[in-house]
Amino acid sequence: MLASSEGTVMGDEATQGGPAGDARLEQIIAALRTVYDPEIPVNVYDFGLIYAIDAVGERDIAIKMTLTAPGCPVAGILPGQVAQAVASVDGVDHCDVELVWDPPWDQSRMSDEARLELGMF
Image (tube, rainbow, N blue to C red; front, side, top):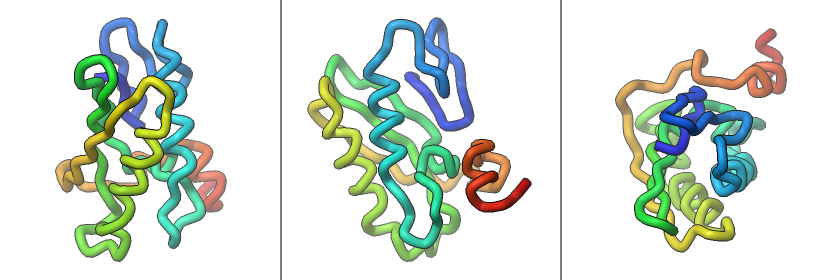
């Protein structure tokens, strides 16, 4: 696993500040931060919707993400926007996005920046 928006550390790779030796992860996270749910003024990464970022071979990426609710009106478009943003990163040929519902999303997954943007402090 390269990263999750919860700040998972796997081996020598750390997230949220850039992993040891993997500038590509920083670029992927930057790309994810350009994707927004149109109803929420916070990007999908800081909002905690990205559960995992995995390298598949040398140039493919697999993302596990969720939405705030199964009936979310952007369920049909947001995963595609995530895949497109990540696939635009140098060194990435393809990105598969899997929509997962377990564990359910909750506010504890949001970054401090997201909480600040939403006035939750």
